[in-house]
Image (cartoon, rainbow, N blue to C red; front, top):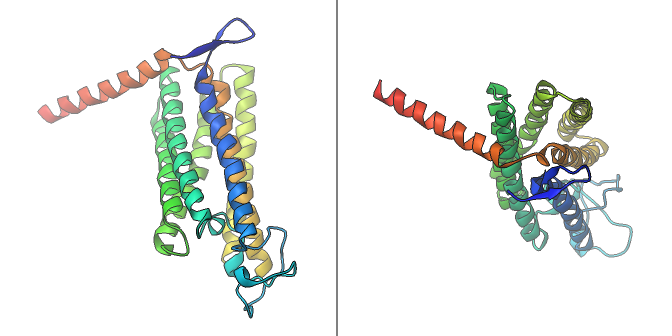
Length: 268
């Protein structure tokens, strides 16, 4: 286990970099993809609230600052990464984020086992994180303009899976809290979870409306939801600094115990 000395003389595991790396790479990544889509006129600016039912010329062929936008040009995250060259980078970004989500979920699961806080809720947290990771992989590799059904399946896993993950992890944070800092972290996660719940629900409600303004608001709320969830993941850096070889050993012991239990059941 790679460790570094902290200012208090203790040891801090470099695993704390894993939760931080998710928003550090993902947030600039999605904004760069948005900037590329904007430059190539594949979407309209996020500050544009005026849409038309039809336009004489498609957005990509228009010139000047006064653009005619339809709902096909709404700046949803997946729309920004819907066509090349943005789709190539979007696929890479989602695949990388999916891998990091899997690692963070597994480390969090192991950490709670090590703290003797393992429960059905802990298993649900691991499942929710990996559900989100699977959805991200599908969303990134099946663009909405070319494989709409599969893309929506991926989105249906990613967004509810993310919300379930933050809800479960907030409950687990309160259950495992022992120090004042633990409770402060739990309060922060509760706040982020409440904001994530509100933005996702409103985004879903607005998205199915016929109003152009409400559908654009749904896109804005989708961006806000993604940022909130990424900030939630980064909060694990506070605890991952204490991960040690014993934490990973606890995970391996748990797996070995489950395998042994499975073999005993087979003999019955």
